Length: 335
Image (cartoon, rainbow, N blue to C red):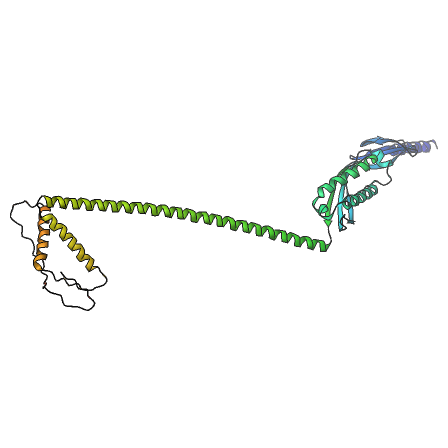
């Protein structure tokens, strides 16, 4: 009988020890109650709790948590209906307050976030709600964090996931955006054409300047050439005059023969006639050619007073006195 009593006593002791040992996981806190009254918070690790007197009240998650805000319809300041949903990031800093200051922490945070979201977005018009999302997040974070401070909770972030305006407003915004894009494109195109016209005008201006400079240089060169030709003509005339003064007839014969040949060349190149008739005395033509021959002999090194060189006989041109016979389509030149 005694043996059974000892076995029962040992079993009871082991059961009490097992019930006294509480292991708290990392990231959690347990509230310990004595006869239903909070006394302390059990930290992560091994904790001994007297059974039947003390017990674990709440198991609080101390890590940062995410709470989804369900989608809801909100009326903006300009009476536009938008659908909004978001998320709330929070972390419990005081396990005792989170356990005993609020009945259901998750429901309370969700309800608080929803009501304040309606308040914040209801004070803004549609354009502001679509363009100032960061401002909405900041205002909502400040309001909710201040309200949950007494619960031992820290609201770290509030983010709006989606803002969905009505379909008719979306279509109107699409048309407005398209019109704005087309306006910008037209402005850019006109500016491009304007710049192109300016560049083209500048190019034409530079081309005209260069052309004018080229014409100026050409005129200068042409005037210089005419001046040199006139100077050469003056020098030739002076040489002929000096030769005439010294009594040499060969120079005057050369000058006359040169003018005579130039005149014949002008008649030959005239487009008004195919054939030219010269009623010229043969003796005059031979005299002229003879003067040219004498001058050429002197130029080529003939000695004055020496025996005359035999020059090739000039071709004879038959010419008679009196008017030449008239030929249709041919100009008549009298000698």
